[in-house]
Image 1: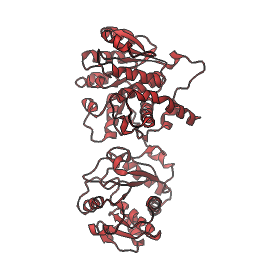
Image 2: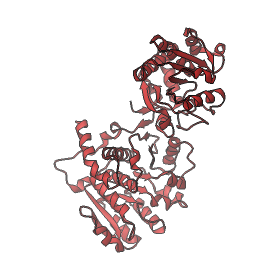
Image 3: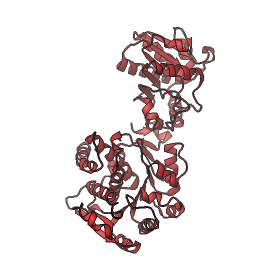
Image 4: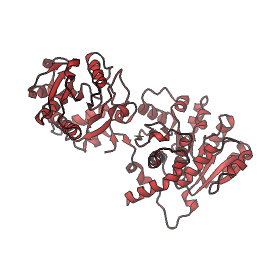
Length: 487
């Protein structure tokens, strides 16, 4: 279950299920049943307050309250609005609830050990205010565990952004497939434990709604992984070229180069400014070094057709020379990774860059670098998608919820990156992983997705105390596990 749905696609999935003969009443009953089951599995039959909204989320809440009570829990229920104004399936479920319906006031929390937030769902488009906000805030102030139905109220299901206010949930239970807002921060943190439950929507509806966003997992990119041939040799596995910065600024390029070699490139060369050759040579063995003095010299290094993938930017220094080197690599049709300085260098020349970029290029900005080339980022997924279309290349927008988007509309959200990755040089290693995979012929979107997942897995395997140099060293164990799973 790697697909991620938008709010609209989830509505479409519901409609498709109903068109196939599954009534909305049956879907709502199933949703409430599965949430009640999840609550009982984790918390048992505790005294519970169920907070219901005026729509379908509230209808789910009435089902949850009824089933928790049947399981032996003491249940109180509060409704935002009037019971007589409920419509459709929510009204049906309200009639099945035989208990009291209290107004949405703080007093309904008295005696509760657990709160179910069934006020608003993922499609909310306005800030949470008034009594809903007051009671949810009171629940948090009392440190009551909150179970969110679909999303915590106030969390937008597409962007993961908070509309004015959203409570911190201990657990969020959603249906059929997760939504992008469950994976994007701050939504990911606010959801707590995320459970996706089956409510009877058949998988075949995915063919109708055609999702284009996935959780980044090996199943997406392993089919593109280059197999090792017994007749293979280093040249058949690609030759990556990494541009080095000048004296005192060479470490980032070396990190990227070692990462490219570890991820499987047959050869890796650091293209070093002449004055920085001794500095690079003091630290490199398996990675080769070639020197250059000017842009013409760098272009000559690129002219070797076996050097098929180029990484530019780590520690390179912003300026005209770097812009010229980037454009030279693009002119020669190389697979290119642009990171750090190579992105900032085009802050005032984005059109010149966009004219040269092609589908076998990966840009790896963090949020600040992204803003130098693209429009303001109000929605990370939508903004990264738009950026990929605008520039015609794959964009990997880094962060705890890295988003990778291709110009054709495909996107993944990465979910395995630990906080330990917030350390100097880890982004350079990621750029190197991308470059090494491109050198082996992996398409840009799959290369970026694989590199990001491997990056997170290596960091997770290492744990606390991680520094950038540890990431390539941890990669062999990650690759060994992947190979074992694939067979």
